[in-house]
Length: 121
Image 1: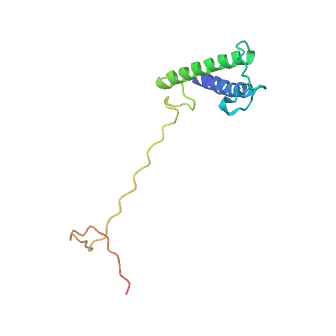
Image 2: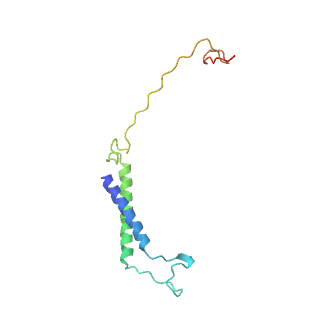
């Protein structure tokens, strides 16, 4: 279920970006994209491109909410399988065996716990 919603979410996002890029730029306060004559034009609310962008935006938010609800629920199927976290359980590595310390050495505390390091003549 989550894979289906995630796939739809990605497709909607790509199509939404394409539709936003296809729309005509208003230019803001920089004077870019002026319609000519310096007079601003009214927005056409009936434009099919604008309506499609609105519908895609609503679908994008709905799939976002759906994915967040599915992510909150730990019992849903995950993208990679396993225990619902999305990652397989990886066992911890075994600890390295302890090496015995040579006898006869002494450290600054006099306990003899430090290994003996031979000095070169």
